[in-house]
Image 1 (cartoon, rainbow, N blue to C red):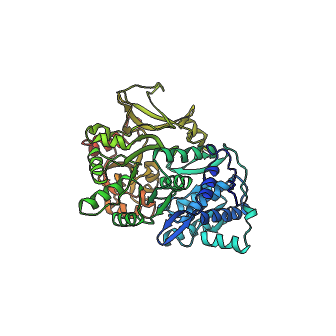
Image 2 (image 1 turned 60 degrees about the vertical axis):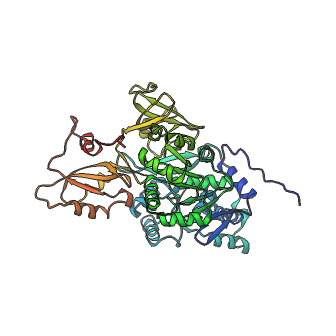
Image 3 (image 1 turned 90 degrees about the vertical axis):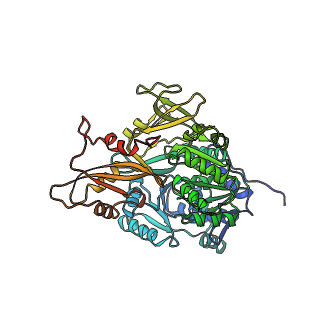
Length: 525
């Protein structure tokens, strides 16, 4: 029988067109690997159709669907089924607490929660907590094998999962990031924006159909974008449920991994493992980002892995590829270490400017705020027009990061306007942590800052003024904070002071609090 490809439509503005073509063209290949499980593109395709049928039966187009599926292959199936059904993905970071997840589900207006009993016990308990807090939300267990079996037996009809027509401007996802008012903000991305994001990841990360990607950060975070790029390209993804340098290296070597994405904390642990005699997997590409890496450690990484590193710089509002420091840049950095302090030059699909306080673009050597624009910038913050207007101006995302150009067009990040802390590749807003710590008995005043940490990039540090007569200890505050915050937001250091330094406007002077910790650092982030 002759080959007749299914028409897929305009792939540059419709992400489903990218994925459906790949699912068809690579049907016999392996798409996902998790432990002993292998999921072919054909199996993935049938699971997506089955889940799409289930979702369409209970959720009208443009409804929100929360996803708590950890590092399971089912996360990727859910991602595609949501797009196929013109629904809106609301991914839940497994590192958040159940209370934080419930807030996101409720705020987003999601009517469905996708989860699995195959998750770790802590995640299963969080799913149950969400269900108890929000009884109107429908909870669906997702299993690729069960979906495929239901289609084969006829208990689930493929006809009920036909592709739902969608517009490029329709919402595709709402990603939650830290908010300056103590609650996370929902960052809305359109279908056209998601399609552009996938294309950008394929181009800038140099993803090919022959690649084997080793992913061990959360699929709800940046790793999900790399998994999407891999599936669109017809590559293979190996999913690790838990990162250790030993497991990463062993699984990567056994699987023949050619590509990996890590955050700086993971990179440091891999370098320490290598320095102690550990054998690293023979990768062709190693992408890193989410937080700065010092030039000395980058030099160590290039020497350990070879000239295969790529650095990305972006934000949830403009995902990942505002600038890129390429493999060639890293290789050149061995001779010119100034390059290793840069986050690179503008990526193919993005534009970048550095502006002064009046919004005027600045040239080389002048310091100002970094702004990004691209086909994949957010459309706005959910139900927050004030924050949207403040951040998204004439199509440009104001990052609140401070930087400058050099004469070659390389961008250097110098500082951060907002009180955001980047720890282990995750964004933590100090106001969010402060709001929780302020609930503790004996805390009169608290200011949260990021301090240098050789492993995490930055560590969350709380400066606390105790109430008169209170018997607070740093250890006690740290212990109590563990019950209030998701793991990556937890306080790592507590400093007790008698009086908080204040600005002329009566606010905690965080610049003064940070200064002693960052005095000997080359960058203040």
